[in-house]
Image 1 (tube, one colour):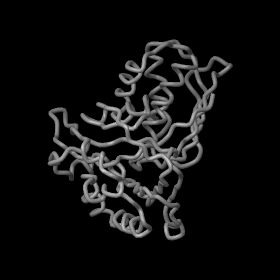
Image 2 (cartoon, one colour):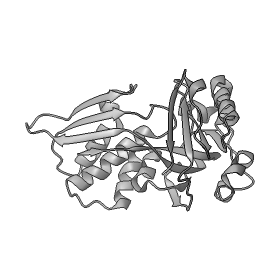
Image 3 (cartoon, rainbow, N blue to C red):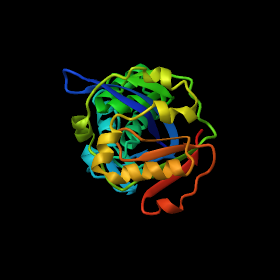
Length: 272
């Protein structure tokens, strides 16, 4: 069985407050985008100890046992009889880029193990499992545009349609630390909540919607600010860093040129 876990972008990110559990309450819009990994699994015919996993494509920093796909399998295996699997993950979404690739891989694995083995797990229970793997994982269970609150796990679906817009994603081939980004941030709720601002036309977002991580992260990595400037110069309606970085995306009415992004990892597509 082959599945194609997609990435997401953050449209705006307000770090509202630090919580007693050392996490932060945020408000952000999570939007699914058609940049996809490929994930395949088959049941091992020979009864072996443990799963086999092969990873191709872009490199990952974590080893097999730390990979969220394996963690998702083992999480379900704690309650269900799931045989050893042979897994192939082909990475297209850059690791540590703010695009949710690892979270998506894990959530899709939960969903499709449920379907393949006919486990009958409800969406709400799948979200509970996903939350054990990471806050962003919950989003990919429904995989629909949503306002994210709490740690990112409290989701309210919204009617936001960016279909037929061009999306450009530029990853500067550097990895930013989410923990470090939060440590540099100064939590403060916005005067107007993102849930209201997102209703404005896309062409107005650059005046209204920001990513609270962006100033601090681009201060440490000047290339992020340089990429944002280039994308706006190319005519983007809106441009932002996604999550805690380091990927930057632009939303366009037209297909942008790619030539001057050649030092970086670049992806372009039409929103679905």
